[in-house]
Length: 416
Image (cartoon, rainbow, N blue to C red; front, side, top):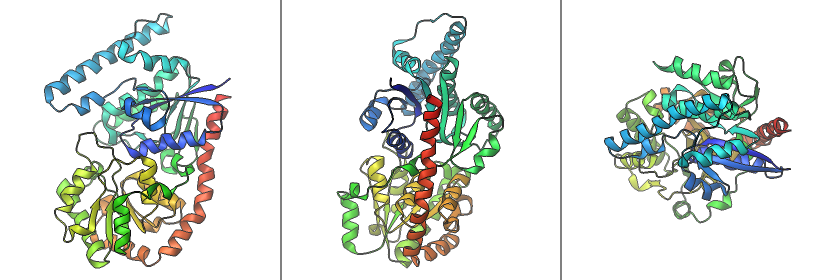
């Protein structure tokens, strides 16, 4: 009889998070399991993952996407009332009584009850960098499975850091849930320092298990047009949010503009901006890239991909460039696993650990230390050694891919 796996809290507008789900489905393709998902945007997720998808247990989607302040307040009150009712519902459930569930949440609740295991997918959700509201939603999404008696697993995740005024509260909330989770697998060593009292195993990032198919990028017009120009193509991802932990927006944009100018003017390369967020109407990396383009010396050598490509195609695009400069975590994963010589602008330790796994830690620079001179030193070393760098990453990939597949083996053992 098939086992039912409910993957919860997928943030599918983010291509990295979506690729985690795709990689998890790929790892489980030969297992006798049925997968369902709770997603931030379930109507989109159904077309992405081709399984039943439901809304998050506690969702901030409507709050975030509302344009006007009054509508945001109304959405916040609506979800706040649901949270209060959910706690009341849980109290009654604990004494054997099941209260009425609102229609908009009924399918989600049923999915939890129909599952054999509730799985929180790979990513970076339990950290103060996401703010109290998001971590609360994630914590409830995972812990509700435990409350109703299901096995729970956190699948190839990063835990922490917990900083700032709300850091201690967010850490307490996260660890309360994680210590009660049946199994946690983490994707880099740095997370271990937060995992006291947890049943935790060190594995590797989920997406490393999914091979890159560069043929998926064959019809990307912008990539083909750049190929015809005959210049070295440098792929690039930026981060339109996390820079704020280190710089003002103006400082970050100036640093990135200077770096892009160095790549295009001094090294005569073309730069292809590869978005890692689906267009949701909010300010995103495409918007920031357009602002940067207006500041460049050679804007014609800076091409922005504006089409909303799937994570598989985005990965293939990164796998098709000559050299890749990544800031978004899963874009760095895409570059490393495809063998493309990769330079990481690391906003957190996790990216440095991924680079170290592939033997190219010397090709990483911390975002907080970013400047044109430091960047160029690394860029020059890579561009002068493209073949040897590619070979080194390819040699390490198969070892890391097997380590990534351990996540699936541990999940199936939990289901047994």
